[in-house]
Image (cartoon, rainbow, N blue to C red; front, top):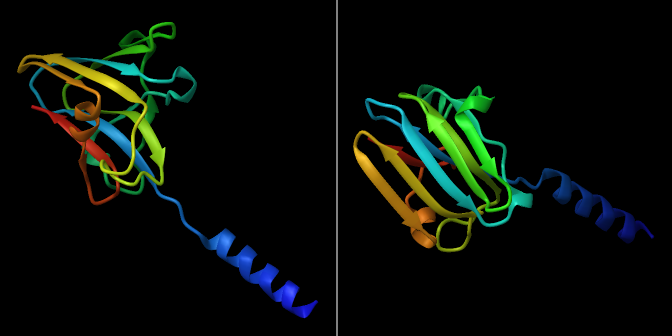
Length: 146
């Protein structure tokens, strides 16, 4: 009986102290003009809320994410297409994953990404859309539009 109790305590301790990491997939507008982001979500049931912050807050303890204004966001649930208008010097998180194992091991809920702005249009589909995000020290993955 003592052995079962000890094993139970050890198991609970390991469970309660195990850590998970949250990886956020962020697009940053470093250009001189507003950009339009269109991305297609694979599964709308797993779609994240679209939030924005200032890029200088990224990596800090208080990233101060706020919901994006309704006039800057369009979501077509039938097609899975999300459109975001992102002002200059803003960051937007479009996906979050718990315990993401990196581009080789994990996948995200984004099928394609199109970004249009003053520096031209960029289109990424499938795995290429995922690998455009570069890992940062805080375990976030960021794509910069310059």
